[in-house]
Image 1 (cartoon, rainbow, N blue to C red):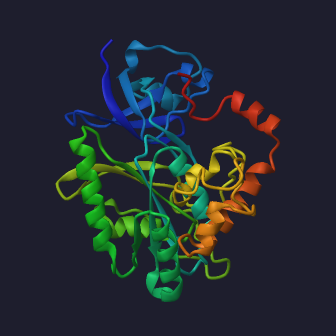
Image 2 (cartoon, helix red, strand yellow):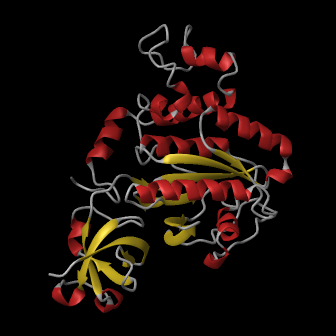
Image 3 (cartoon, rainbow, N blue to C red):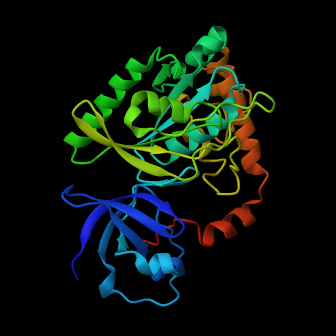
Length: 339
C-alpha cells in the first residue's frame, strides 16, 4: 500500500487536511481509520502522519463526507508532546499572549499555560499585547516573567510597535529547527480578546485570519476562531508552522491531570536553584520556615505574584483526591498514544 508522510494541519467534523512533507503534492483531504477511535486516539493538528489512498481501505459506518474523502490517515507517528487545550501535537513553542488591559490581564491563567508547556518540554514565550494601554502594568509584567527566565516581548498588535523584535525571534527559532532537520510548530494561546489573531495577521497579512473586537459590555472577545489550524509561514527564508487556536478565558487545570503537586515546582524555572536547598526535605514552597523559594522572593529575585500563582495552582491540583486522579489517568485520554 502506497503511503505518504505529512503534517496534519486542520481537522473539522471528522475530516482532516494533511500537508505532504515533500511539498510536491496538494493537500490531502483525509478521514481517519476507525481503529483510532477504538484505541482512544484523536488525530491532532501538528501530528506527523502517514496517509494512503482511500480506495484501498474499506470501512463500515462512514458518513457521506468521510466516504468522499480521497485519503485515509493510516498511522499517527509517535508524538513529542500533546496539548488538550489548545488541542495540538508536537508543539515546540507556546506563545502566551496576555493583554495589558481590555480585558484585564489574567496572569494566573497564563501561569497555568506556562506550567503545562514547561512540563511538556515546550518553550513558553510571553507576549504582552496592548502595551500602550497601561505602561505601568506592562513594565510590571515584563519584570515578572523576565525574572522567571522566559523570553518576553511587549508590543501592540494594533499599531505594530514592538512587533519587529518578535519577528526576529521567530526567524531565529525557525532557523534552529530547520538546521536540526525539523520545523518549528508554534501556537498562540491566551484569553479571548488578548489579540492573538490580530497579532498573527500583523505578522503575516496573507493569512487573513478573522479578528473581532472585544465586547465593551462583558470585556470578553467572541470566539472568532472555531478550530485549530496550522499555517505554513515564512520567517525570513525559513518555514515553520503557525497555529491559530480558539480563544478561551478559563482553563480547567485539574480535569485533564496535567501534572501533580509534586511535579509542579519543576514547572517554575525560577525554583530550580532552590530545590534541595530548603530546610525541610519535603518542603512545599508555600509557607515553611527556611524555604529557599520564599527567601528568593524576599530578596526580590522572584516576583511575589508568580509565587502566589504557584500556591493557587497547587491548591487547585490538591482539590482532586489522588485516588480519583489515578483512576482518570488509567482511562482513555483524548489524543492519547498507547506506546
